[in-house]
Image (tube, rainbow, N blue to C red):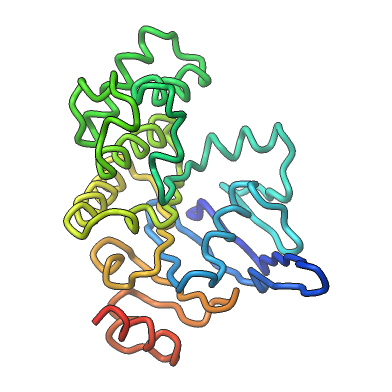
Length: 251
């Protein structure tokens, strides 16, 4: 089995008053082991909802999710534990994803301890993971509010990879950062994929940003996948008017 993730006819609707909104409209795609797949589209296209469905943060209204060969559908607590052993997320606002009262090193340690590692070993390993992500040992004793946005995002990546996931989902992980830091974080993610062999699902609205590190691109619009291909194919020869509009917005 070469696929870490496959979704088939995935559907999610929300009801607001008398209005029903289809946030994800029967989409299908897969992520191969070691692959980086980009899911791009403007705000409200359904990208983040897809991530929430995969990780069990939202319940499915239809379709199937197959994770490492096993169907995961509206998982219960026991199944969610398995999901989080295989999948970790990096969020858009790194500071908000941390407990402000807990030091960065302790946040990285938490996942290691939950996997059965002793506290002292977890402390040393947490420092190792922070260093892998470009942060010195001194960052282990700092609080989220004491570091920059880019440094905090590096720490959140360290926390995620400490659990040794097979799939890392990055939900607009660089959109809150300035251009220089965005490039540094994307370089780090590419290096981690190469070094650790993990698959990545990159959720983003910027086609130019994903061109440097992703193998394939899926373009979402109003809950549907409207175009797919390599980054070069999608950017150089877009077939859909919506994709052309996205490209024009970054040129």
